[in-house]
Structures are given as structure tokens and as C-alpha cells.
Length: 97
Image 1: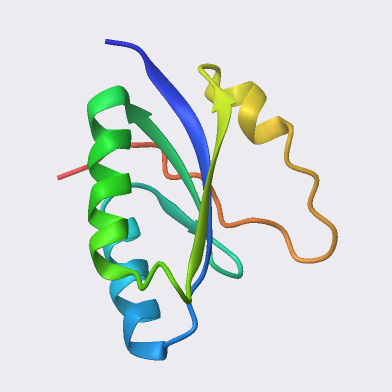
Image 2 (image 1 turned 135 degrees about the vertical axis):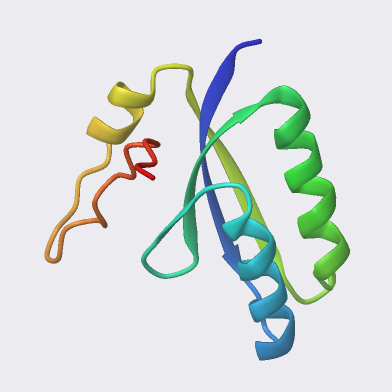
């Protein structure tokens, strides 16, 4: 099953909903500054992310966007131009016990 990279951005008007949406997205990807997440997801996980996020939002007041960056994670990360403070270090996915 192929994974694709997504940039998920959101503008949530209520602080309580904002915390809930942020918590949902922590389960799907890595937090970048200012309400942005970088996610590498299978199709089913992308659909679940959208459903989970919609359940926490007020769609009349809030806004969210999912941008498809393609299947190549290295290229997707390199496409991000950062001015000022660098993005957080990438988690290697390796766990040492």
C-alpha cells in the first residue's frame, strides 16, 4: 500500500476545539509551527484523519486544508522553504529499547 505526504493546515476559532483538533492530528503526523502538520499516510489513514478532524471542528467557523505533496517523502520535505527558525528534526522512526 502506497503512502503519500500531506501538509495539513487549520484555523480553529475556539481554543477548546483547537486543542482537540491538534490532539487528533498528533496521532497522524508531526507538528510544524503554527497549526501545520506534516503527515505520511496510507489512503485509509488520510480518510480517517479527515473524518476525525471534521468531528472536532465547527465547519461554519473553522477551516482546515489538506495539501497532497506526493509519494516521495524526501522530495516533499525538501520542497518546504523555511525562513527563520528551522523545522523540528525529523523523527527517524527508529526506536531504541
